[in-house]
Amino acid sequence: MLDLVIRGATVVDGTGAPPQRADVGLAAGRIAVVGPSIADAARRAIDAGGLALAPGFIDLHTHYDAQVLWDRLLSISPWHGVTTVVMGNCGFSLAPTRPAHRDLLLRTLENVEGMSLDALRAGIGEDWAFETFPDYLDAVERRGVAANVGAFVGHTAIRTYVLGDEATEREATPEEIARMRAVVRESLAAGALGFATSKAPTHVGAAGRPVPSRAATPAEIETLAGALGEAGHGVLQATLGPGLFLDEFERIARATGRPVTFTALLAGMLGPEGHRGVLERCAKLRADGVRVHPQVTPRPLQVEFQMGSPLPFLALPFFASYLAADAAGKRAILAGPELRAELRAQADRGRLGEGLRSTRVVECPGEPALAEQTLGALADARGVHPADVLFDLSLASDLSARFRIGVFNTDERAVAELLTHPASVLGLSDAGAHASQLCDAGLPTDLLGRWVREKGVLPLEEAVRRLTSEPSELLGLRDRGRIAPGLAADLVLFDPATVGCAPLRRVHDFPAGADRLVADALGVEAVIVNGVPIREAGRDVVDPAGPLPGRVLRGGREG
Ligand SMILES: [Zn+2]
Image (cartoon, rainbow, N blue to C red):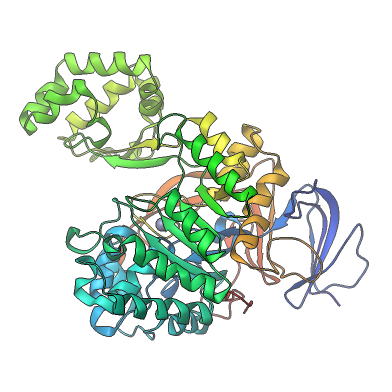
């Protein structure tokens, strides 16, 4: 007797093989049978005619470490077909943490997670129920979760655990490095999927200090990563920065024999064609059996700004006198004709124009209807130039209107190269982080809608492979990521003709009334985790307070 049979789906099995019409039967949380027509009796049948059935998507770059403690449904990743998330990226795991350092760690995460300290405190509560990394995995397991979770143990947490208040201030002693390495080893033994660190200059924590991992020497990072080789499982996830890039990744991958995946390789980050050299070098290493995988994303990297301090224009010479002016001077320049004319001319000449057209209004006081509209659409409606909309809204709001512009990954030809290169892996959804500033948890539906259906950059089966078996293989999750008898029944049923990611919208559903951005999924009909449907027709179908089907996935074995 099957628990569930899905009939007549176009099965995209995760291996990259061409889609095939088939029935899929589930029993006891596993895929029991795949065939042209299943005759076995089943407790429930879903007619999937015309829909695609894929393995559940695996998101290997998320930051749900705190959120999972108050939101057992892990919204919003499952909305987009994600059935497995990996937390602890960039080194920001919540464990290990001593009681005395809890506040320090939360203040470190405050900026990184883009969440108010009040929300983090209210969400996690007084009783942390864990101190070590093994305790943390057990605590998540006990609470229950709708999707599967795996976690990296994070350098920032480990450094704070061992060095305390000095974690952001100084190099570690050899004795401290040895203690940190023992923590990595213990965490891997308990099931960490790897070790994560960051040297990114943008990772700024408590009191504006660099996050603790940024104070580490290359030798410290290499020593801690060495525990991966010793354990024989797990990956190094690293966010690149000064002193931590390809040479170091190659050395660590060779020394440990473990894969390295780094965040991120974005179009435009190293100049217009700079990504190519990185891809070629990683491909050569791969041919040599050394695995260094850049994480790539179909989504543009965006920053928010106000015209009082317009980050995207800092490097433009014709903005120099504007930047030097005080607030009254800035208003006068915005109201005058010269800077407008210059920005219009520059925009019409080059790539800046595309960036300006696609810039979105985040909020404009007094004009809520403008939120999430592009300057291009507003300019067309008003019969003016996008530069005029930018200046006029800023003037009308006394420079308080906020905008969001894509800074990297906006050149679609280059993004297509990144998305289709064999050395890259999909990553950087950053789901759960930057909650009030951005939301790229819809990476899978964006890929399937824009890059598969609309642009034809990837065939459906290849996009699905990159969302499923490729990350499962990298993470060592042996029984997920494909549709085949005996494997875990993590599945997503979607309509290839309508699947997509809706624009962002702001909601106030976080602890302490904090806000965040979310994006709805389009065309995702059902999401199944370990044989249990958790979403159907765009709605949750599990009781958030009841038993949930997600598991804590432990490296080196599967829990
Ligand atoms: Zn991250």
